[in-house]
Image 1 (cartoon, rainbow, N blue to C red):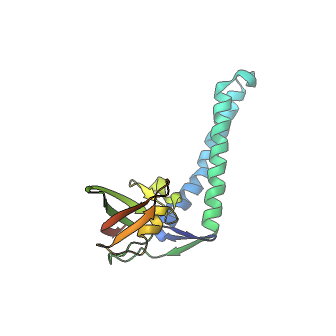
Image 2: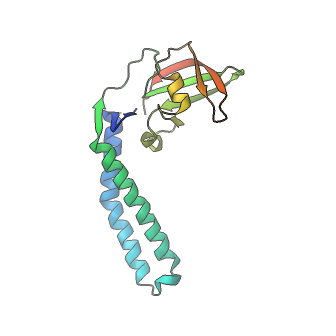
Image 3: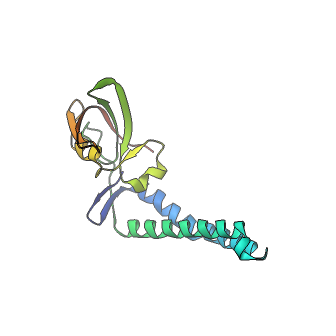
Length: 166
């Protein structure tokens, strides 16, 4: 449900609310929990050989990184509407494609920022990825091409594009 352009990330209200709730949890109750884990591990004695202490400190570092990422993302977020159900592929759409080399080989994914991937049960491709750039703006029934990591071109057919419902 997001599209990153320069420093602006477009989010639906639902996506914004989910990411804001995650930030509030991480910077509130989760910080308190990790501080208690670290304190309990410190009380066990020698920190050089204390696996629980080192694990808790590593978890704290990852948590603080996520807090910084979310803070920056939400500071630059622009809240918009869910894309219309008009068959045009754009960020916020769940897209089903078929690969030209094997029409029975289909895949379904959410075209959205990687920040939204953790909230989605569907595989997520960024609009900036080669596949995302190839399908963005296409309509159901259109063919799209994108460059593979080996430099070759791949073709897909857009089978379906529906707004993501969470």
